[in-house]
Length: 572
Image 1 (cartoon, rainbow, N blue to C red):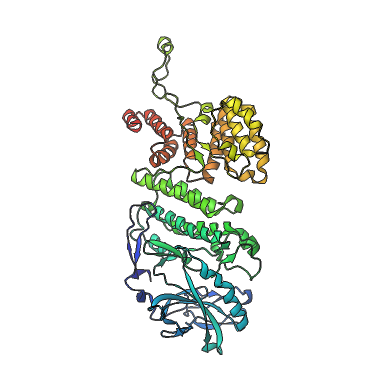
Image 2 (cartoon, rainbow, N blue to C red):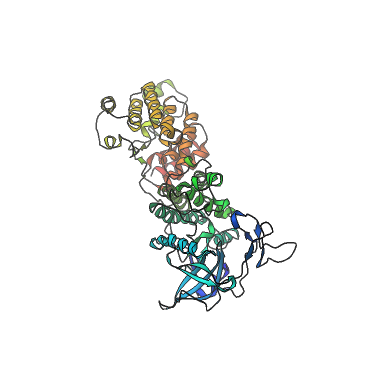
């Protein structure tokens, strides 16, 4: 089916997708519809046996009986070309097979034969139960988002093969494109334009766009539940989530087991069912969907440059963590980190910056530099010091905390409003003012911790951090701000290797942010791993040329390698 589409290269914008074109919708209609080649789960009263699969060299059966529960199955299309549903929708033919049966292309005879998609909803001998099920799902017709297929109507039709029992159908806008499951095959075969280093940018763009749709559903108190490649359509240069059959109301506790696909379902949902459904289950599905796509990229030419591959790995690792508390907390939070990684890969590939202010870290005017190239004082000349004539510029560990970006306070913290007010108080006076704050506040304690580090009072800073950890409570193991401040304390102690471990935790939590990469670049440089330091510094500097600390770091590395001209080029 995918061969019928033409796929053209994307535009230059980082979020631009290749353009999928189809000459005619009728080209999608199957001449001889066949059932799914690998069979399907029976599903009758929870039966998990596979029915209709090829067996002992024999082809798949279109109809028969479940070998386990003996319930009949029938994969032949229930609708034929020319059938009229609801006195309005004329069937053109079958275009695909989904979890609830065949999907048909039809024409709306009351709206100038506009194309629509028809999909089986339910087949139930209890007509009252069918009508109830249809009415309960009508709220889905109210959904309105460009990334979600629009549901137009629900209709019922007597099935002549089943003594006239009613069958329910859902009528949706028709989206003519390829599913991400088909795109996955293009990636595996390295079909243009999925054959080069821009591939990961396209995959991340899919993630950002899908998360817009998922975030909209979450805002409507709905869970998608069954996010997977076959449920996302790439049409033209856009995407749509195309199957709302599994949508679940947030907090819903009845209605039977949720519709999920095991390979894309979060571990807690597999273990506990509907009671474990939250937004984080959907985000797990998004992560697994992107993972399915990138796992097909086995050619070196498809790999992202520089640090991009590692940042991508970490963003997926967080999205698909077994512990739901370690995953992203919302679609917006996950999208922000995907977007950061996308811009990083885009800038590394093109050598062209993609700056955008961070929403998590405030910029700092200080530089991670200790007078690079400074001519030494007279005593060095008189004493004949054997060290290099020009200073390397690498700052001492205890100097680094004051030169790193500063985390914005958590807006949900009681002290966030106070910390948002600019102040020119020195660190001593600021500590006095913050200690007067009347409410328990972890953010107040973290700010006091940094003020103590400014004064060189390391033990006082450690006490403030300990109080912040206590106030954070059960969320402390997952709070990246605590890891960040622990790293600052380790630097104040001169324990750079320990600081690197803490900064690495922040990088895993925020793979799209500048700040942890800048800090890790310094740690790697200080510990002598210049190749790794260069990867971190380049990821920051290429993305945003105003990040002076990364430029000075790259210059120091080039000087250390004997490349004075390269150092001058960077600083120029």
